[in-house]
Image (cartoon, rainbow, N blue to C red; front, side, top):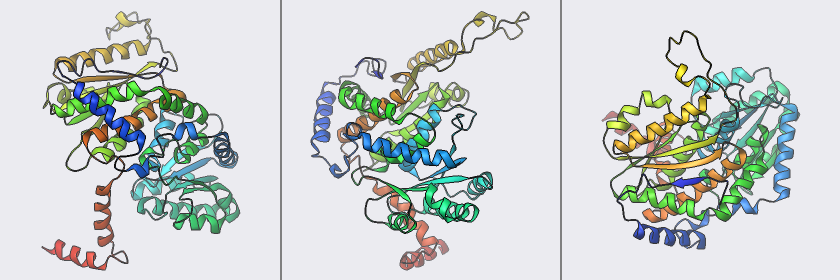
Length: 439
């Protein structure tokens, strides 16, 4: 593929023999594509981009247009994969300081991803007296964090604007047939979209879960899907190169992967990536720990550890070709800051030299360095990147020997929380918890 993301691994794999891993990666890819591996009932994302048709896109765009026509704010309520992908794309494409799009459309806010009381209070205070809509995303409708947020904002919207406005401007993305949210949507007459049964949350960006908030924010979901289709149909080598490299380094004792970017708008893309790989691979006491840094900012905080700390890390640098704007550094006659030597150059040139200098320094410091390049931060290239990371995650998980598509460990904290809250049906666990806390 030309005009697409590229993976460069030569500074990560020097001296390593990778042929056995290439064979393992090809076998893992075959397992993934044939649907014969663990978790094969959650492979709906694999051919999702190319299966999205005009009718689906049009329905999402029409619902987005409804919210955009009546709302100053739209609150997208979800947790984990139900919000991270959409937020990653919106943040990546937005003006850094304009609270998303400045084209007259609504500002998209995110709730339900935490149980922070002040966070919820501040958001309620922000939208009070303003027309707002809600996108509520949950297969069950009973997940604690989003359910609390939805209960609060639903009541607030109905009291503030009336039930007719609320029913018109609340959209539920949920299970096709069952669950509390599906039942409520039918009773209240909400427009709905379906979370496919065979697509797990962290792989759901290209379903209505991600596409609707992105469309509400005013961005081109067709270009996003187009980019994902390009990678689905032609990104095999990039996927294999990344999966092979990270597993080769893991086998050499590199237990932590640091995803580094030099473009501030990619911060939440890294947050989405952390969930994708952490939840997919962290099983059976195996798995690379996914971490992320924003450079050059974090070079002044984490840079020392990365350069000279324990050599259990490798670095994957996400590099962007073209910026959206150009800012030229001016000349200053006094030159008290000593910067006239770069006067007349654009800021991104300096940033690119910082990126190259950092990579070379870390390589010299014993940090293997992978490089993933994207031509620009646009809907199309973000679509490519999302699908690339998803498929590489599936291949990498099978190389590692885990089921990349379940998350049994996520339930542990919920059981304790429900016992402590004395949720009905958890009486025995509550009694045991009280005994434990007295010890």
